[in-house]
Image (cartoon, rainbow, N blue to C red; front, side, top):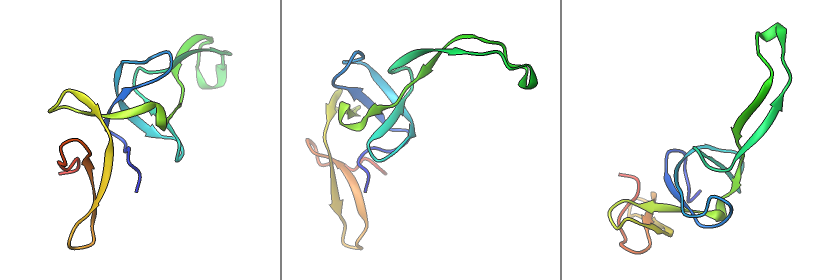
Length: 105
């Protein structure tokens, strides 16, 4: 079970965007995630008249490693670790390690 999922609010713990909050917009692979407004890079784009695209320099979100982000606990207002708890009906749920509360309700 992945500990981070699309839509989770995360706190960046390392890199050039350390200390910022963002929401996961896409899981690229098991280890890479895209976070809104985090790790922006400037990309040079050629104009493409067939698709009516103008060229220029655009800012694009680049993937970061999932170990550089921690889930943000909105109740404690701090980043938190994620644990996986197995319920009686053999369902796995994600919980905050500090409080033990379920993340997915």
